[in-house]
Length: 175
Image 1 (spheres, helix red, strand yellow):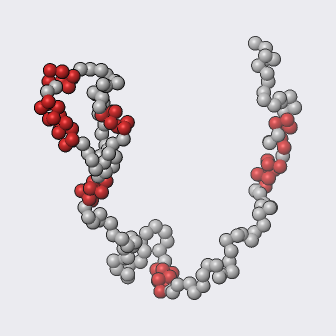
Image 2 (cartoon, rainbow, N blue to C red; image 1 turned 60 degrees about the horizontal axis):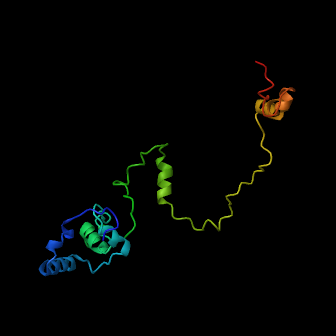
Image 3 (cartoon, rainbow, N blue to C red; image 1 turned 30 degrees about the vertical axis):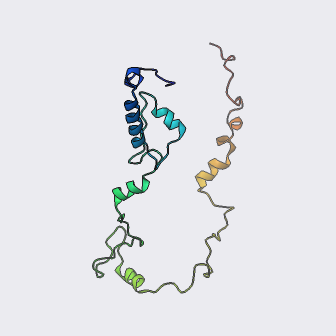
């Protein structure tokens, strides 16, 4: 019995339920069952209902039993990826200087190309990424210093003695 959408179909006709018809339908149901990927009970209930259609994902069946087959069909045995790292192409002619953005300085570029790697690691070099400048005092532009240090520009009570925090109450304003 179908719990949803109790419509009638040809399978409800009792005059058609002969022994031969039952054997044929049992054989057909057996041949249509997927024994490699069993479906859970909720999917069985859904597929037994009329007007309910269940479909797998993109090129993958319900239960994802054919993921390997789908991948093999889609990309083949060799998926086309090269296992080594991607290296940028070097210049085609080493005699041509760098013509990208910025100032071109062939002498500095040649010195950089011909120099070896740094002999010491960054951790061995005595330089640090922490700035040695004191950060507690930074001199300001005089005009900016005059406006920031003056409380008339920052504190509302200093600018207007009648100023009320949050504004005037709306009932106090006469119309």
